Amino acid sequence: MSSISMPATDSQPTAAEYLARAVALATENVRDAGGPFGAIVVSADGQVFEGVNRVTANLDPSAHAEVTAIRAACQGLGTFDLTGATLYTSCEPCPMCLATSLWARIDRVYFAADRHDAADAGFDDAVFYRYFEGGPEDRAIMPVAQEQLSSDERVAPFTEWNANTSRTEY
Ligand SMILES: Nc1nc2[nH]cnc2c(=O)[nH]1
Image (cartoon, rainbow, N blue to C red; front, side, top):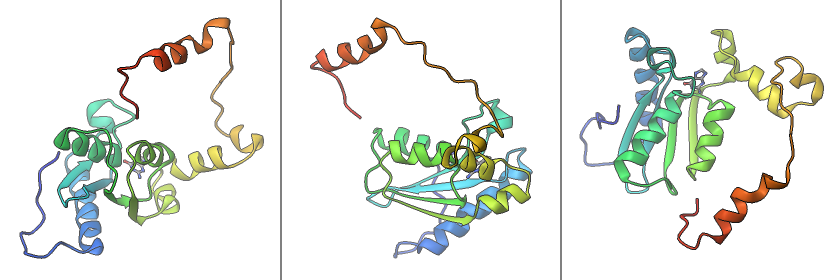
């Protein structure tokens, strides 16, 4: 989803209007067999890209509304760098969506509901924040077995990367 469906006016919509549109997208998406999340990316030059949660519909755990909107913006603008863009989302970005926003170099995020509202509706956003922000005891609540198996070749990809003078940095 990347169409522009904001009302056509001469002036730029306000942050509250973009946010209301993201919330409306989220509600509509539930009726379209999606999760209750919607998001909008507005590029530095005012172009609007929409996204909704399609995790269960697309069998894609990464298809959160924010990620979907960021993908639409990047594809639509032909770039992986959304410097100057603003993300409006119906709910506080989860850690994955926040990290995706960081990698996309998004400038600013506005959200409506928060992680606690999401928790009340049965989503793990607040649990995942605890996982990343807390100590070892917080990570024990949802263990992901993670272990470094170091080898002499472990930095070979980075060596190759730095030697590649035609690399595209991001
Ligand atoms: N912010 C946000 N939180 C979620 N939790 C589960 N899915 C989503 C999503 O699409 N967006």
